[in-house]
Length: 471
Picture 1 (tube, rainbow, N blue to C red):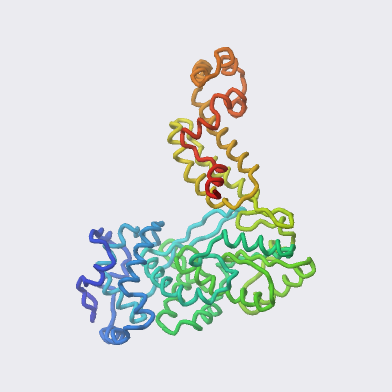
Picture 2 (picture 1 turned 90 degrees about the vertical axis):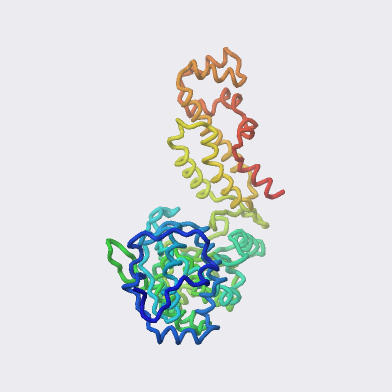
């Protein structure tokens, strides 16, 4: 039976933002939305219908929901704690939308707990993400689309993370400009477990300065407090903002905007991307003074902790930022950080593991998207030597795979001759007794499989890609 006071007709409003073909929801998914458990009073529905221009009403407008639905589906993503996939979303929401909307308008909707997922951190260890269910991702995305135009104009010009028309590249260029202007000491800030330590009361106080709709405020707080589901039980969250939902980046920017404004008030040169913040000063003494004052501000005003072990005052060319390094020149040159080069090699090793039995075209197809995406991100690099070396390393890895695939000396000699090596040299090279990695870097394999051949096979060259992007 439908809940009391809710007309469960498949309203035309849903047809405006859902595709025509839908998938019937799997039995048992999100049981809180079943007719037996949903109870929204007729009085609350009547009350909400009388407020057509509230923030919550704009969040639930068909055009806004359509955009949110398209974004959630395009992002794909893993299922939440209820196991529902994005493919199930259309059918589920179409069936239960009248109940969902009535609960949201009445301020009676409660999100599900998030599913905890641990992912490795680049510097070692793990970071825990909280994956909301797809219905909550849809609602969060709809909220984000209405809250961003309210808050984004209030943010600092030196904040670049997760904002419209802003990027990590702009943050990196700003950092270089600060150093070029003579601020040749860097205060590198590391906020200790930032997303785990966000104080809900402090954050909600800043949100409430711009948002009057109490239902929206209550819903945001419930998303903050949505616990982690494990073994069928949900542990309530007392602090922190779970990473993994569409709303978390905006909420982090709202809180850290207070730090930005304090730094601007003091006249500091800085750059911030999410919780990665660097301040640029003219001397070490000034840097130490700034570090102490920022630590006090974070602790007293935002209830956040500065990790002193990972925070430091150092020269900018000793501080990597967002994967980039910087030279010591008066006009600094950007380069790929050593750690970024190492991470790419590790990623490629993982992709190439087990490729011994695959066709080379398939191997190249597997690694090309990674190479292309990496080159796109590091297109600001002005140091070409490490990129040329990296290209050579990739080609050597592929030659090593081929040498292993050829196995027998006779096969290796025949293939070398087929690639233009004379018979005598091919037979000597094929039986030289050296291992695959040595042979993959030897002159006979370089001559047989030069760069121009890999170009014809479609292998992405990082250096060529970056040069093409710059041109």
